Image 1 (spheres, one colour):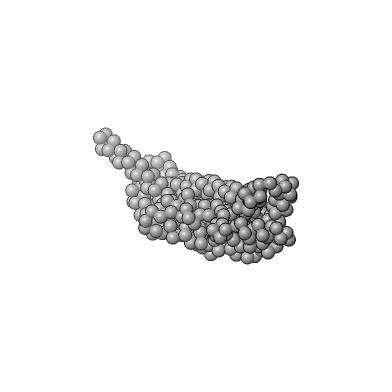
Image 2 (image 1 turned 90 degrees about the vertical axis):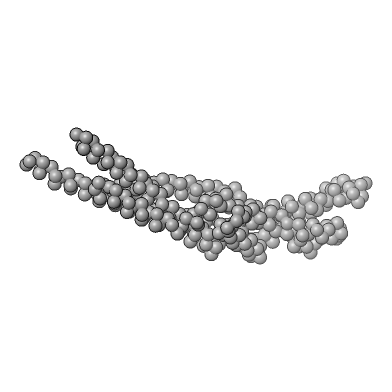
Length: 323
């Protein structure tokens, strides 16, 4: 009796250990996929640049850039404030008309400049610089930050010079030339906040450090699970269940993160749904596909293990009846 009770305890402990080990194996397996995806897709600069190109060409994003730059230029060239300082008694209606004409000119010329390929190349260059900075921060040994690389900035000087060249009114050209100092020309304005994944920096660093060990941890956990299991078919079934459940959880987390990035892209860049979907798909579709493959492998292992257990039970029952 005491021996039977000890055997029952041992079997229970072994089964609990198997459950723990197959759970660890599933976590390490999906962590390995995530680390591989982060290194080969998310942190691969050419892949990231191909994904971001439709955002750069998006009309909504360009229009937001135009509005941001125009507002910054108009804040610098405040006709009302300038004329109040230079000629306080100047006719107010004339000032208002001058300010309205200048505002119209600023927005028209800057919108045309922002729609050029030159601005697109500038933006792509800034995005490349930001992404390279992010990759460097992920692989850094110190606690570095990518805050400085999380914003797309443009200098106001070229746009102010454009206004001087295109202004039809000599008075406007004279005011801009005389009253805008050089330090204002060097001033930069934040066109876009490109901090898309900087808040995931610590997770990316952890995955980068763990990536070489996660496949080995998965293999060792599965080997120990099969060794500890009373029957190999039980371990196979448990591993399949863990991988299948892990696939559901990992898929849900990936879908939620994809929605977060899409929402962030819309709010940050004012990009269209089509370009946002292209960006998110280019980055996250490989991850979703790999997770799906592993989940299918888990389902296959679960069904094979279940079939082996059913066959074992069906073959043992007649012998029990005969005995």
